[in-house]
Image (cartoon, rainbow, N blue to C red):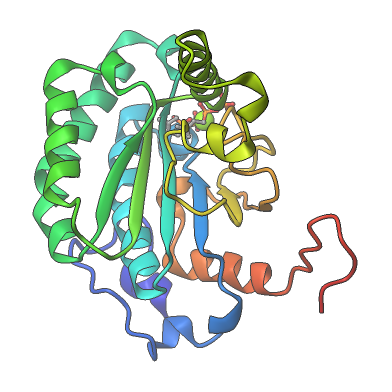
Length: 265
Ligand code: IPE
Ligand code: IPE
Ligand code: MG
């Protein structure tokens, strides 16, 4: 039913946050929801190719999916939703595609900012933001500032992000503090490292979702996913629906997370 009403890229423009008793959430085990979900939104290009369209049309379609899924995450009262929008490796793509994506991020922020704010979302950007176009950087900082006192879902958007690059920056920062005599090497703890990451203040990732059939992390949240569960689907991101997202939640609820210990029933 949901697929018909809201499915995929051809779906209508307006979405309501699903209520807790909405039919969409019938199968949800509210006691066993992940708190932090991370998504590798992959397959925009393949979706477009399959329809005989340009890759860029796939990216445009993917933005609509993102809006649906954020609304669903709000309805589920997740603590955090982190999405991979642009990796440190994505600069290898043809210049017109990169330029298109930068413009798309800018348009998305312009269009969705107010509604996200009204939805009590706390937006935050992960990655080397200073490597992005200047005007986009300003939009990102303004968006973070606007929503900084909100108390709803933490919506982290990874742009010019790489897990290895994040750890490199954290290491440089810690080394600089040590060299300045502010920190002794033997005093460095796991929290010291966590506090230097772009995700500072977030819970560890419970569930990583990747669309479009590839089974890899592609340099996403290497530290934060240390004990995450993984859920993969062949569905391309523009076709991914709230119902698919619920499927991932249901699967997660049935997992036995041992964290190196013994069966946790
Ligand atoms: C994911 O879709 C979006 C970005 C990486 C920006 P892709 O553009 O990677 O689509 P495929 O994987 O080529 O189909
Ligand atoms: C990962 O997808 C990055 C994003 C979804 C933004 P890619 O399409 O860039 O990953 P690879 O190249 O297949 O590993
Ligand atoms: Mg891809």
